[in-house]
Length: 320
Image (cartoon, rainbow, N blue to C red; front, side):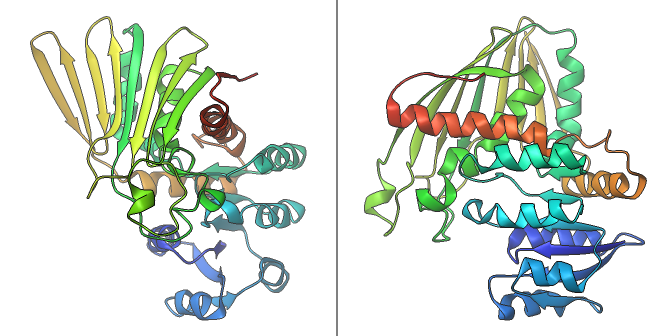
């Protein structure tokens, strides 16, 4: 199986490293914003070539699948090129920073193309354990968090390029909420530029924010985020039920029921799982084991975009 990458950053390196340890997978192409970046990645592989144009890469190589690992503002033309050629793709979150994914999803559906989106929390053992526990728990509310520092890459702190923290980062927690508790129908957000705008030049993203969400099943959730801290703090989702609290963090599930507290540590690499399942789907043509298709991820994207809209308008956004 021949696989190409669009992007040369951390996610490309992470996925490529995993693919390099899989039998029958050959990484043969890298498309970057410069030939220097593309060729630097390609040199790590015996059969890989660097490109700066997605069309040229696809014209010169017959690829079985492509990974898209680019900043939010760079989506659109890449996906359309792959859809036109019927090439399955794995795309890292977020899908974009605007409404473009609606049209992309429509074209994917028309072609029946296999896709997967990098919401890796869905592939965690701890998430599976939480879903199992929730079968006999009645959920009342949930509190989500992404409390950390600001990634020091220029595009991230530019709201016109990243969409802001809720779209680019906290989307993982929104997706985990959807996956574990149900679909979201109402979004109300309050954001502000509190500190970082005066500390880091070029910062236009809100650095504090809180979003209240009402789910179709009546569950109320609040998801808050900040990037003002010196380092990462609390990241995860706490689910409040009739039997106690299920706390999901990056590598741990903590179950508190009365005086009883149990902890379950993450046992697997969710990045490995999402890659394995995606490539199996491409090989077999059966995508039923993919936990986050493009169409499903679009629902998470719509929530995060609605949060931005709500923060600007000061009104509740109702999702159809």
